[in-house]
Amino acid sequence: MKKATYTIIILILGFYFFNSQALLAQEKSRAITKDEKLLKEKLISKESTLTWDKSKHVFGSIEHQKAVIAEFTFTNSSKAPVAITKVGTTCGCTSPSYPKEPIMPGKKGTIKLRFDAVSPGFFKKAAKIHFSDGSAKEIEIEGKVVVRRSNLK
Image (tube, rainbow, N blue to C red; front, side, top):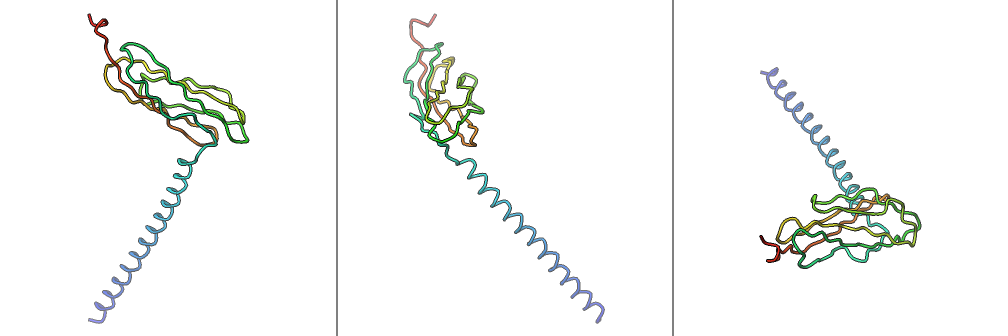
């Protein structure tokens, strides 16, 4: 009887010990995850020292099968040159053009988004610009592609 009681007590203590170790490991992983999240948020939300004239361009109505271009101008307000490292768009119908050389402090840069009006109807497209200082900026274009009666065959 005493052996069975001791065995049960040892099993219960062992269970609590291993369970507490698992909880401690879980807490450590949660702490790491929270720290990683904070670091990631800081990197994502890191504001650049670039000043933008606008972040959205509304074309209004544009003609079907025509290409239009929106220009977005920014000024480098920092004390160091900033280069555009990558520009990603949400659609193949939108293509960016941007300066490949660094933008010097106090100078302006221009990003152009060309939209090919292939499909009729409302459109809203975005491009995300990544900079050498680790910041990023999203710009948008929107409008409506209309088919003129004279273009119908």
